[in-house]
Image 1 (cartoon, one colour):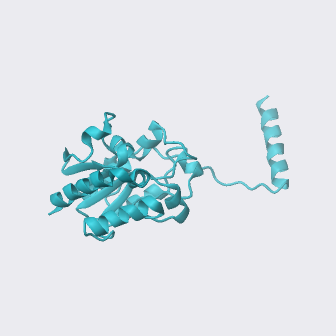
Image 2: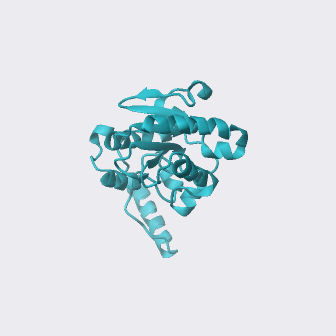
Image 3: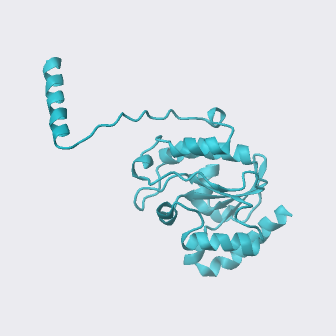
Length: 220
């Protein structure tokens, strides 16, 4: 019986080949890593991220985006997910939210974007307009933990409630912690509104400016 099934499968494969289909070697799935097993180099870590197949986002992404900026930055921004604009351009600080974040960094914090480090909690663009699942977020957690370990930022700024929740696991009211200075491992964590949320809710820009002044005060 097995021999017959194998013969039928082989005939079907030859038929597909005659129609122009080609075959590739199967992808060896990643084994869930921990930050302790990941490389002690941001460059090598970025290569690992680019070849990650730990979750279903690897099937729909254009690329993984590991991060951008100064590997010794005292200030690190963490967004939740790669945006459609970032995925399309394969670049950072693009789209309306990217331009606003650049302005916050350069015009309020008086730093160049090359002086800070920017990354995402989830390194690939979510499929469609859906938020990543818990398992998809968890697949990226060791990568983010390793980046924090290697960069050792003085200040971590999470952009929006999703980024804060993924980093900390705190599912409480975001307004309770927004703008607060929170000890986080060997850094200080300051959650603030996501720039895209501010684009859509310009009345909150005054609150965001106060949060930026808090960040600036901790950097001095």
